[in-house]
Image (tube, rainbow, N blue to C red; front, side, top):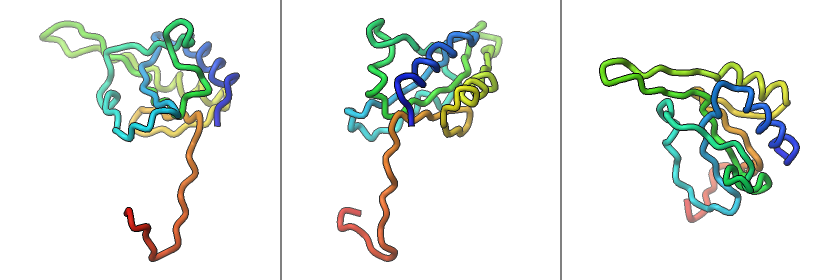
Length: 130
């Protein structure tokens, strides 16, 4: 789905946004099946889109998927609601301009480095581990 050149172009394009959008990712070596809920609410933290040798993203060929929420919550005070900076439209335009395939659900973009094939099963049969 993605190659190093597309990842690098995306890293450079993200620098044109008002902030570096927060993300969570899973590497292909990570077999953890837990669901990441860090992006369910508008995050108040930034993503580090630099390369691994700058302590940012892991080596690009290791990324299985990346979930990005291009919104940022900024605290303004105890009595005032947080300000929300929304770069969703601009981020979507970047992905489309770079022809990067993505899935979008609830303002969360999923970009796949690798996508596992869906398992096909015969109808009315089930593996014993089901």
